[in-house]
Image (cartoon, rainbow over the protein chains, first blue to last red):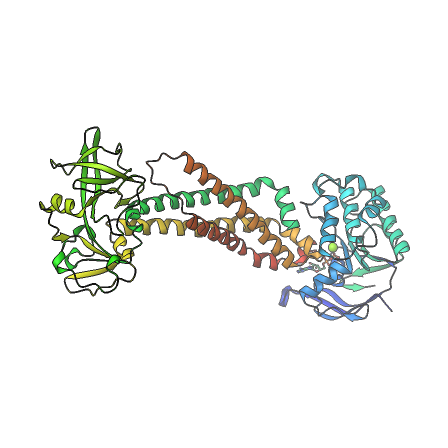
Length: 219
Length: 352
Ligand SMILES: Nc1ncnc2c1ncn2[C@@H]1O[C@H](COP(=O)(O)OP(=O)(O)O)[C@@H](O)[C@H]1O
Ligand SMILES: [Mg+2]
């Protein structure tokens, strides 16, 4: 059974002459435990694909199955729940709540979900090398530290699927490769699945499988 | 509540500003209320303590006690308990005496065995002619002192003193009805009075010579009283509405500023409702602190104000306005709800 399956996903923005076909008939199957890389030129639809898979927006047409359940027609409340319980996001820019310390970002999740996560915040932050920074606010962290906290936050609660949109773009190349290595390790160790957008060949080298996007189509 | 408080803690300055604004408005409301209530009280405190129900005054007085004169012979028959009725003579006057400055007073002629008798702070009720009870609002009065009324030669002896018994803002001087008659009409024979006061089960039929007013109607007809109460009520209501707008605008600006943060949280699967609840908690928290500081300010003001300022706190009014203030604070924050619910988690990604 595939973890996620996309069938004939189309996404259009705008109307009439302003219309953009951001995604054009995407078919994609993602197996559990994979580290998947997504690359392609700017404007080719990578972010759009990631956000549709992550249930941040719906497709214009087509179907998305997550664990064999159709999720493209869910309402915003159901999507919110799905994102909270099953998905993790590592985004390019600000990922953290600015008025919470590193520690509190995790406490917030604890408060909102009833059960304990399988990995403690301490384990995750230690693995990613930012446990020392736990009492700091995001604004006082370096870009790399912030990104690693964001990764820890995305992994917390062990979501089945993690979406990362250019997670290493703001890091220097040494850090970028370190983060790529950590993401690769996670899929091996916990069986979590990661879909990562990146332009960086050396980062993509850590992935198990790569897709290329061009003009809204997978090649 | 967790999110709400964490955020306030992180942005102390901006939330302190909101609290400070709520405090200022709350304080102003309490201050106006204290003044309004104090002034209103000064118009009516002597009347309130009768716990009466109605007064009969002359038809020609145009509902104004001060202008009423009615013949005792004219009084209609009373059904019910005679003890629940009393005759009242009322006129404005001036008190003078050795060691006393001339002061305005409201003169009440009453029988001291009726329910119109005032509660005494010290002394006793008059037992013979030309003994009086005065309110301590008259500066310098003391027991056994001789005073004159309205420039007449007659000396009156103060035998009792009341506290906070005023009518139409003037401290009241109480005389026996016969002395009142003597003062006003030159004869101790009580043939004319100002009003016939009824309480409890006493009942009379109004005639075309007489007007029956409830006590609150009568108080509202005290010259200046109604407009004054309305003016204060209007100011206070306006402030209550203004607080909703101020909090609303503040919270709205903060909400707009936080759109990206909310986007991140929405992307992480935190529901819009949780963000709304956080906003509500914030407004309640800010409101409670601001109102609390306003109350504290009010207490300090009450202690610090000179006694001459007619400032009286009414716990019921203060509780009422505090409650309404808190509600208005929350109502203000409600403006931002649709804005929060509209926030798209995609905002966190920042488009392309
Ligand atoms: N919210 C949107 N509204 C309108 N057009 C959009 C929106 N999001 C993306 N697009 C358009 O869709 C296309 C794909 O964008 P995107 O998925 O961000 O590409 P990539 O991430 O590969 O750079 C671009 O032409 C972009 O302008
Ligand atoms: Mg992109």
